[in-house]
Amino acid sequence: MDYPLSLALVDFLPVLAMAAGVVLLVPLLAGPARAAGGLGGTLVVLGGALKALWKLLVAVGGPDVALLSGAQFYLFAPGFALLAWAVLRPGAPLWAFAGFTLAGLAAAAATGGVWPLLVVTTVCATILSIRLLLLSRQLAGRLLFGFNLLGTYAMGLLASRPEQPIALQWVEESLNTLIWTAFAVAVWRLRAASPVPATIGEQSS
Image (cartoon, rainbow, N blue to C red; front, side, top):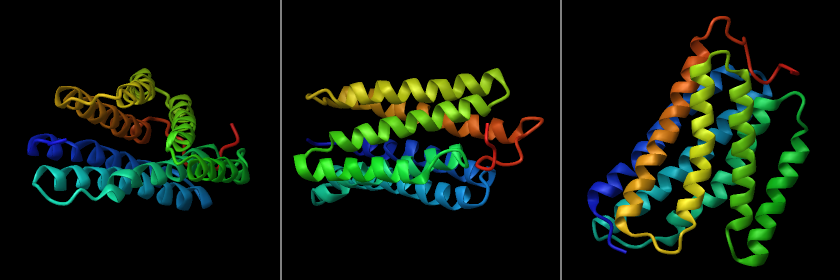
């Protein structure tokens, strides 16, 4: 498919918003959770950036490097798993998230499809959003995290359509930008709230 350059450039906007949300979130994490959240966030942002780079290359007539397009699925699954564990720590066992992710990777390798990785990503992204929603002390923050969660499901439904005309992709990228902008703003509000949880990842509740 031929992608217009404008659409390819817009594809970087949700990546930037996602990166902003991660940068705001990681300092709220404590101990091993901070390292896990930093690594997980890096994997998620890298996955989005590689997909955007692939689209940009195609838009300017460059090579169609399928590895750049498909890498996001293999980066999102462990990335969101690490983020979900980080915000749930210390109550959540790391082995459970690691095992779930490895099972998804193994199933993807066995079936040749990415749907097992999408399952891992969706489950872990849901845990992440719900946990942050519950930690938010303001209605606006909870609504933003809720929008992020519901928007993620909507994106999954739109992306699963076999036909992806340019008009639909504009809708997807616009929605994706709003989703991750909402996430970044919600995390910022969580940081700015009074009283603010000193850290996430050391709480047992």
